Image 1 (cartoon, rainbow, N blue to C red):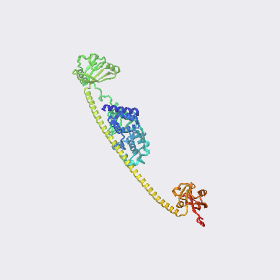
Image 2: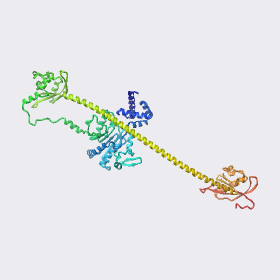
Image 3: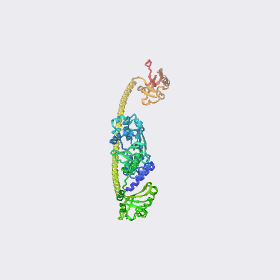
Length: 618
């Protein structure tokens, strides 16, 4: 893409931003603006400004990222310490001028609020932290809403507080979970608000305006406009502080220089301007020795005066012309006594007749400045022509016409103006170069801070991963501990189970355990020997449904009684058949199974074969 096409496409993007979001970036320096926009486009992989406009239309959240890229918020507490020391020395003077009223301070382009709070701390040092709130009001403005939100929170990290003196940290900051914050009584002094220096009215009647490293982002025309706005915002003799590479091009008449090195200026009061204008005119000269009566001396002075003079009487006739005027206009002695209006000098190089009539009518002097006159050789000379009415005892005595040659002065003035323009152009170029260098430095500083932030984020991510790894290791150890515990319990359970199996095998009875639903839970070895069913064939089935040689239906009532009353039942004797079909007499007894919570979890059924004379179950 050619440079013209690229410029046109960038203009289209800027116009779109102005129309959609009311952000006017046209006054920003084109080189800086192009770099910042291209940086954001490169991050997204977009090469064309028109494509970027399409992207903004589809992704409105991108506006915030673009503005954060363009608006470089590089600042710190007490940035450029020499300037703050110079300002600290001027605070008593500012306080004296504002005696009896509240001091007003405006921090324009405040970014994260560090500059505004730095000013508050200086005034708190002068007035004391307990009284500064009654004597000071600070207005801090910026175009970046995100920066303003950070400034309102007033929470700063240790790295952001590196430039704050230790005693200031102790007096003016409090600990916060995210770092340190400005004390509440100081935060209440500062009012933060969004403000566009180019379009919003300036805050007025300020005793101090801090606008540092803000003008340098704008072109020369906009800088001149902004300096005029800052001048309006100041009270008489109010102090303006600019960035170390910024100056007041073409606006020196509005400010006095307080400290050129620290870019500190004071507003020229309106009364002082009037005094300077009045001083241009002084009292009329009077001869302390009285009037001069020697008429011959006066005639000699008139004749040999370096300025050309013509003298007219009350009738308008030329009555005297000194040597300079005769030489200048080629007047011969015979013209004396002739009406002035008939002479060439009355209308060339400028029309004088109407001016003479005006002087006679109004009794006031008339002056024609910078009148051009071409000599016969073709050169140009310049004159200031003055026409003055002469009076004698209040009566019209005549007219004096003076021709002051200003050719040399005019040439000198042209040369001075040309030299001044050349110097101003060179100075502006140098200033622009300095501002470009400072802007580049700001961008480098911003890049360094971004890299530091990225490094911190990577460090934080690494720490987070390490923490997660430790948490996973801890969880693994817990699982391992649980697994060991389960293994131990399993071994214990197997041991108990083997023990119970051994006990059940040693009991010469059929032992059957059922749950509250009468489903078989335990079926010992003797039960298999007596009834012919293995444990896996009966476990989980209702005992009342089993097809064995024992009449299980007679157990229904005693089992339910044991479950309901939680006590052993009386034994029951019934006739049964063994698994081989041999008849036998059996005795059954039901005992409730009590669990760990003292509730009945089931019943234990003990069945044995009854032999004659056997009393083992009694």
